[in-house]
Length: 300
Ligand code: 13P
Image (tube, rainbow, N blue to C red; front, side):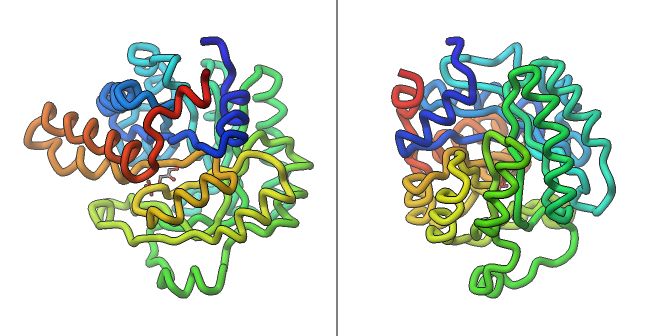
C-alpha cells in the first residue's frame, strides 16, 4: 500500500490511463466518493480546493485531512489539495504559502499551487517556492500554466470563440520552461476545458459541453514529459476525454458532476443527497471516463 502518488501518476501516464480527482465541497460527500472508487475498483484522488472552504463547506485543510483519515482506503485513494491560488477567482491575493504549508505539514500526498493568474516569471517563482517546501517532505506538486476559465464571477467569453482562438491555452514552449525551472511533478494545462461555475447565482447552471485540443496536449506533452492534468472534467464531450487520456492526460478533476446532485437534494434529505453523490461518482468513473477497474493497472 506504500506507493507514492508520484509513482502511481507515472504508472497511469505510462499505461495510457488516468486518475480521477473528486472535489469535496461538503465534507459529508467524502464517504460516498471513497465508496464509489472502491466499488468500481478505480484508483482516485480525494481533493478539496481553497474555494471549497471559502465558498462552500469543506471547513479547511485540517478538516478535510481529518475527515479523510476516517474514510480513506489506500488501495483506492490518496489525498490531494486542489487549487490554492496565488491570486484567487475574485482577483484577491492569497496567503498561499500558509495554506500549502499547512497541508504539507499535515501529510497530504500532493498539493496544487495555482499561479496561473500571474505573469510567467512570477508563476515560476511562486510555484518553485512551493515545490521546494513540498519536495523536502516528499509531497508531490501540481502547477498550472494557461487559463482554465469558469470559476471567475464575470461573464465568460462565448465558448466557441474561446476554443477557436485558443486564447489562454497553455503554450508548449512556456510549459517546457515552467516545468524545467519549477520542478513540478505534474502540470495542469488549458486545452479547451472550463471549470463549472461556483458563484451563488450560477453554481446550479448546467455546464457547456467542452471540447479539447488533442494536438495541443501532444505538443505540451512533447515539451514537458510530465503527466498532464485536466481541470474542468465535468461535461466534456466523451470522445475528447477518452482521446485525451490516451495522449497523456493522467489526472482529471471532477467537481460539478458530483456537487450539483448533492446540492439539489441536500435541503430535502441528507441520505438522498449522499446517495446521489455515490451514483454520480460511479457514473463518472464508469461511463464518462471509462475508468472502472483502473486500480489493477495503476496499482498491480
Ligand atoms: P468541474 O467542476 O468542471 O468538474 O471542474 C473541477 C475542477 O477542475 C476542480 O479543480
